[in-house]
Image (cartoon, rainbow, N blue to C red; front, side, top):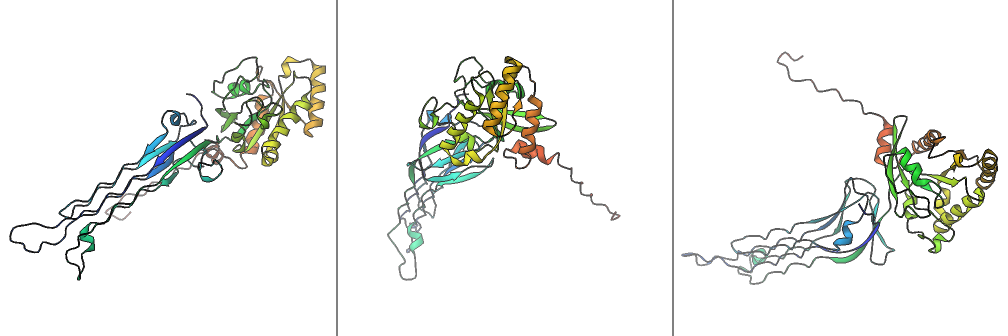
Length: 357
């Protein structure tokens, strides 16, 4: 499935049906009176969060969504049927913006959440509605109200408990493939990962969602490399696991490059809880590893974890450190269920007994 995290969509709710001007015409009934029915209400445009979706790719191939119009009123006091609603299915973490891309309309944070984006127009009144003691034969009816129409932007920010950040080729995709069932593309060249990847990690009976964010380079907030397009997904992560390649020239400089890009994109990202880890420790000599660890410790002002995604050395310890922080405030539904533990079965109510027991 291809990944798409932004789409422009045109939506229009249904117009209301027109009211009817009609009179009862029947043999031997001299004054039948008005019997024009009301028009039906137009359908709404509803956006709903669907479980199992993690991309907006469906909206690349269809951008126009129109709800059904309400039926017109008819004679014999027959009211028009309401138009059918149209439902747009979006993944969890989707935001709806106005056409200017800045005005936030709604933010979806729960599975099954619904939001009425455009209400259908009301149906017009038929002439039977206007009958009164002074006007016994009204010859006027109301037209239905038009529906709402607008262009909107759908923007997806993946909701994950933890996010992997780092320079290209830091070993993020390898780490994700080792700790979860995800199968990201892995190769020995920069920008192998072009789209965010999600994986469910299980450790010590606990589960949480881990996101692999494409690599950042110096100047990403100004559009260099893949730019800051995918940094929005980092906003939803509770904890960041910052992987630094032990085979690079200077681990401290590599760490500071990514941190400066995060701060340049959004100051709030710099305040997120971060675990720093030195990756690919099996690919360097012990002397070089000691130097890199000292450089990274000075830059991050904390002792980094040592791990290797290939040999899996230090991986369980890193996952346990993530779980300890995620349990404080889980983000995804999986982590919430895992932290709460298995639900206790409620006792079944006793059946009726003639003896009252």
